[in-house]
Image (cartoon, rainbow, N blue to C red; front, top):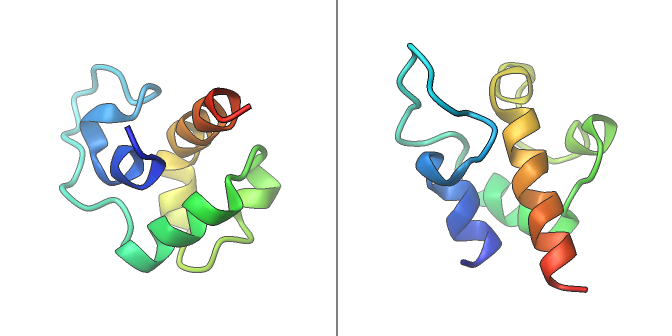
Length: 77
């Protein structure tokens, strides 16, 4: 699965797991997803550099987004 598609689909985020909270249909906008796909951050400090990643999005979904990014980094080696 392409990284942009994986990040755009909340059900594909491995770190969310079962939660009493239902994930929103849109975590971040397409421009932010494109930036995430280009930058492929590996650490939280790198995630903060992605334009459009609000502090709330980083806190709620940052770990999951980093996990998807790390998976794609490993697959592309």
